[in-house]
Length: 133
Image 1 (cartoon, helix red, strand yellow):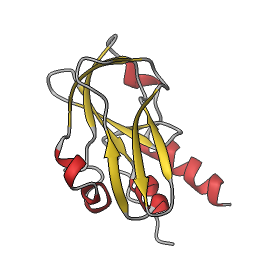
Image 2 (cartoon, helix red, strand yellow):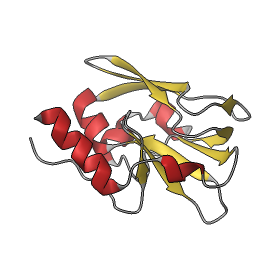
Image 3 (cartoon, one colour):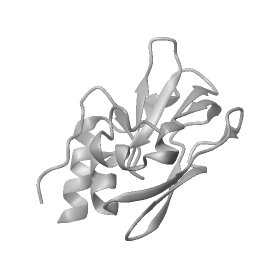
């Protein structure tokens, strides 16, 4: 298996979600290359409603592949501002571009600095290596 791509500018959750801090202070969230690779070809995505308030670690979305269905967890607490509605009709975008066009939701964090408690790219890489050992 080839090593997963892990962009250094993102933060990561142990549950394989990534967080990108946007210039306006909002956060963009998706699943990692490792997660989409493990799931296989995605066939369905269910995203949260805009306005929904999420707690850190709360299940907020569902993705299904030909292999399994999986919950997606919000890595931080906040309010959903928008979701990537294009994924509803083209869930395979997550397989093709998990860190770009495959983003899943954007939220306003409940407090500033909430992404600080997440993993760096190096820390996330160590977790992947320990899981595959």
